[in-house]
Image 1 (cartoon, rainbow, N blue to C red):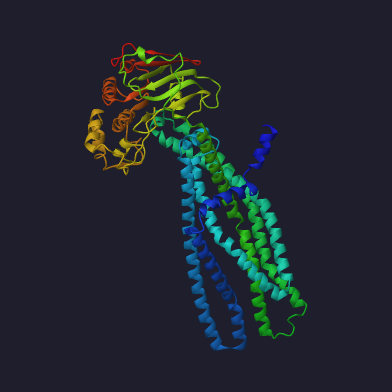
Image 2 (cartoon, rainbow, N blue to C red; image 1 turned 90 degrees about the horizontal axis):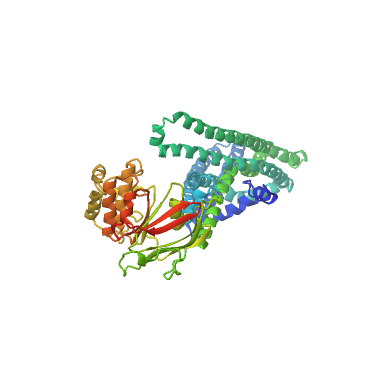
Length: 614
């Protein structure tokens, strides 16, 4: 690694430093979207409750001194009065604590909702979610969105109320301590707090770093289990329990080693926190010793002296307690910082990917340049001369897999035009599916361009990927995807028409298992459907939307030849122009052009003479 990368890596290391405060300041902007938001109102209520609590605690803290006084004076009436007052104060304190806990919990939910909304807005924009998951620049985006964000908001909500109240309580008890011991008390307590803060800051940074690493290892370990769950049937055919246990145990041991390293750093921080807590307990007596031994209270009676010492010691102890409570938050603050780094890093990456994709958007141009000389002229094919609408034009396109210099295809030029079906063929690994990824904008191209003349949408250009995708919901939701069942204006076909397409594709048993189109909802249709059923259901989706153009990536590889003929004939009947990737020779009869990728950048495109459409 060169010195520039090393310097950048050092500055970006997740510690409790400037980078954390920058990232957390940005997250705070999402937590409090405006001054009129509910979150601000809750903060004001928390502040009011916190100040009320300090008043109540002050009077509760003075109860022992009052009892000393009434016991010394043998005052029975005063004893009853102080006892009633004490019960009322304790009841008020219980109410304030319960209300504070409730408001803090609401604040946690609001914060998580606001930050999640921001992340989802970035994550689901264009193809950001694809790029972030495939590029691998950051680990486990799903875990950062769910678990890391949840922990950050939860931990911060627990330390938020003490933090916002601390300045007011510290200022008040500093003032009261000045009255007791002049400036000696405040200076002593502040010096104590500064020393404790510096030491804890040095001990917190390693904890933050290992919290970050722990969450990463936790995500890797969870992902391994999720991967096995998603492919459990394939693994079972291989009887792969032993090898899966081996690799899963590897990830578990890495996680446990990281957790052990974390608790070692937490041990040092815990030691520092606890020693300053207990030192704070005797600091109040040390500060009180000066006015006592100087004779400031020599003229006071014994009962008044006990009461006065009790009241003053409470002031000092509570002032020290205000500082030590902030010190006690060090562990929680370290957890917040570690998770905030992961969430902040995710948002930064999402924003970068979004900005980059904005500059790489393909040009939608209704007047593309003239095709290059290598392109087959449409006059060589017998088609309707009035069907001249184009979907896209590929010009001098050169592409390779991401992070690879192995050119799959060089200077490719063709156009997808209404009424001219194109069959993409070639040996496995020559770049057929890769071509569709480049056209769809999932992969960048090395050179050349792809110009769309129609919007990529279900009614214009629809892609059927090699691995069908199904979301949550009913069987009807799978058919109308990517529309929603609530999009009534966009969902124009009735259920009877969908049933006809289901029957055409041979999926009647699926509707029976699902109790119709809308009576059964599943969170995992991949466990409900066989590979062949997935592909047939994808064609039901295609027929439902009836786009002008469709791009199919081996969409019938799990379907028999007879049904394949039925499906392609239906596409022809519905007027859907196809660009298909496939190996079967039976597909040739439904296409007019063959684009053959020959490997090493070479390609040919020529008419198909045995097409039944020509």
